[in-house]
Image (tube, rainbow, N blue to C red; front, side, top):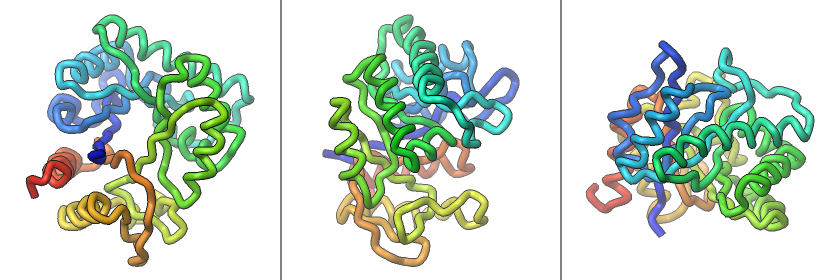
Length: 247
């Protein structure tokens, strides 16, 4: 099965414009749409849902902790029920606009601090799965592909929810499979040749090279390119061409 490209989209809020939704939307296979808690608003959600439908892009919900000021990046201590409820709230908001435009949510990919906490804390991972099961157990959950994928598969199976494993195409990895911290000046990849090499290695051999040159063999259903990356549009086009055997 062809590796799919996913991209975070719809992360503007009010007069604050973030990303280039109209130019980017035609190219990824999957769009992770912000649901209002870290970014987006009524106008933006409505707009990007319609854009996704017009471009035949699969819609994913991108829920987060409720914190616009830090763009949902911080870890926030919520109780179990609070995490379930904030995810349900955001899924409901996005779903309303999907219903309006006769389309649907197909998967969930948490954002920022919630995503990081889900990968570190089994209880939070289960709370995310619980929220999805309450809403619609047919939705897939997208998570970071690591060396411990079997561990996450086993837990998700208890909830009868399928996982999608993603690799960040524009982020450097440590040898243990974790992402290089954004506090490191070398955490983000901005070199076109490096992006081409990475997507080719994933496509042909299912591994990436870590920041120290180690081969990291991991499952990959999808690759993510962040829309705020200054080279996002170019990188998405390059990845698409490589995956479609045009490069």
